[in-house]
Image (cartoon, rainbow, N blue to C red):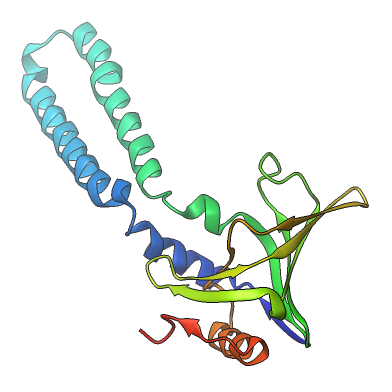
Length: 196
């Protein structure tokens, strides 16, 4: 049995790569730049007016006119850099196991409100695999196959079969190329788009 572990450094690099493909990054970074330039221009304007303005007016304008836009700009920046982050960082201590019959994915979900479990185990029998596609845009493998998902919460297991959505493995494993090669070999199915 082969074991592959998620690599935090690769996760961080993947997040930076994937977020650049989201529209909110492509458009939002220019909005943030324009907001920063506007704030800097306004600060310069206030500094030039400061000698002629009463101190009480200056104390009123600084929090309202500088701090609020600055906080708004920081919130906008946080929003635009978060594209894909919630999906990629949704699994802690993730491992993939390849044995002679199936792929097994084990992880702890970080967002308990989405997946209420202590541990999630996903099993994909090689015989069930219909298609495997490498999504170069999102740097992930999409496996079309009927698979089982077992949720373990406080020692109680709940299993369900999933056939209407693909199983996904992101490119943040230390030996991803080896994982993909062994998966192709064990399933006897090639990964479409892998070498593009």
